[in-house]
Image 1 (cartoon, rainbow, N blue to C red):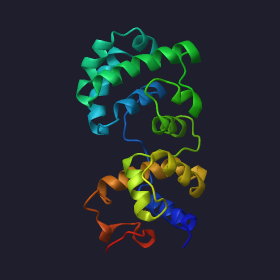
Image 2 (cartoon, rainbow, N blue to C red):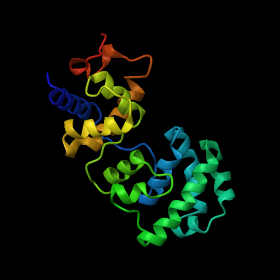
Image 3 (cartoon, one colour):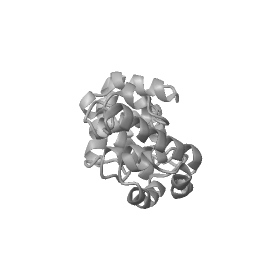
Length: 209
């Protein structure tokens, strides 16, 4: 089985297992998703979802964030960890979105990664979930699972992203990444994978039934 064939089997198996491949971060608009994704770095999505309702109630749009006192934002996002850097980046990205993009979250990788605190993982999530563009979000679950499958042989996020872009159907790539996250949380759990009940067993090089 070639890597491309293995990737196609994995896409189909995860699609059948998790038909609703949704991002677990809760957001009402593109800016909220961008901010929530920044907060999720080294933090669980569940924790971010507890924090963002109060944050977005206090600062409902880019204008409000751009005018915010960074220390007030810090207080609201404190429990997400690395709160000083995250608060600074959130205010900074909103100011740049207002000044450079008329308040609209940009829709290119280059523009998104030019925003404070936005790396390729965050940019790809916005491109895929908001703008419906082919995207590969290389979070820890995606990196771990695609290595176990034998699709990649690296843990470098950029190398994983570029390799998967060559292997995955562009129309399926974004949802495949979301499904890897779901699968990594309930079956292919780090250090205790449930290989006996895994839907990827017949296409995974690392499966130990």
